View (cartoon, rainbow, N blue to C red):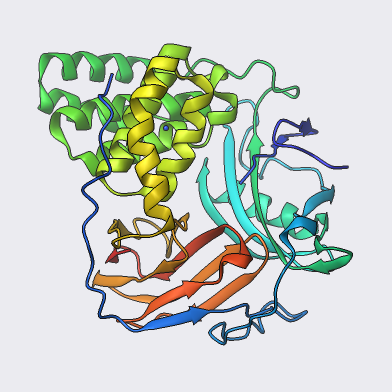
Amino acid sequence: MKLSWKTVFTCAAILAILTCGAVTPTSAADAVPANDAAPAATVADGDPSANPSAVADARASVTEPVDVQVYQAPSIEDFPTLHYPRGQDPMEKEGWVHLNFMVDPNGKAYEISVVESIGGEPFEQDAIRAVQEARFRPARDGSTPVHGGFDLSLLYATNPLYTNVRKVATPRFARAHKALADSIERGDKAAADEQIPKLEVTSIYAHVHKHLILYDYHRKWGTERQQYADLLAALYHVRRDWKLYFAKNTYVSSLNALLALALRLNDLGRALEIWEELQEHASKEQIAAWRPAMDQVERLREGGPPVHFEAEIEKGTSWFNRLFRNSFEVVVLSGRVSEIKLRCEKKFLFFRYEPNVRYTVESRVGKCMIQVVGDTGTKFDF
């Protein structure tokens, strides 16, 4: 069964497939040039063997051409039933897990990573179990099965047909949310701080609205980086089903704010994803206002001065993002980075981290998700 991102099915839970958050538009012209003295290295294909743990060091260049016209991405052939984890009452708590992984030429998933999740580790464990048991149609170059990257979002929801998610939260959440909104409006930070721990999340709807109100909080008392994290948490997981959680004007204005922050913080790979989503929903006037800045981002992707984005491994041991350019460098500011993984449309690439090295990924591997592995709290310039 071949599924698109719009396809959903269920037993005890629901599987949603995704392909793969009033601000004035801002320019991306302030990209800061980097020091070009770093030596260059080419990241090549490190084709994993049948045993995914035996991944070759992926730094030797391979130059054979690939005919992109005959490439076919992986697809789902058979997917097991999702199960609510033991101890998670399906009528009380919802979960959402976004995974990124590779599919080998035999149709099995490997290098499975949780990019983001809602609901906690039990949902993550079941999602990984399901992907491990699933069967995929492998990617193909012509008639030859090859390794291919895959994005998947699994939704553990309370309604078996996913037609009417709970637009409610616990009474404790509702009271805390209203009190927090009132405190923000009054400018009473002490009162606001008392309410934040009471925002108890048991549904995806509550998760979305918790992070929207935290965005308001951080607009008054926080940083742009905190605001950006809030809007990403609220919007990024649910953008294909936004009508279940937002009024249209709220969704569009939030996307505008998210795009403005992505540009100001130089997260340009994600800015392009947000731009694609915004064009589907914004007015013609808004799209026209953004277009000069986004055209400039497109030009920056093709070349020009290096673009800096400050990042942090905020939880766990990994940081994920879309690779904006095929040439990049990771400069550790504090903490430790051990390795870097790239799950690309056509190849899996892996290498041990080395400082003062700029890596170039061959364009023929397609778009890539980058995973920087290191210690929690590590900060780096990407």
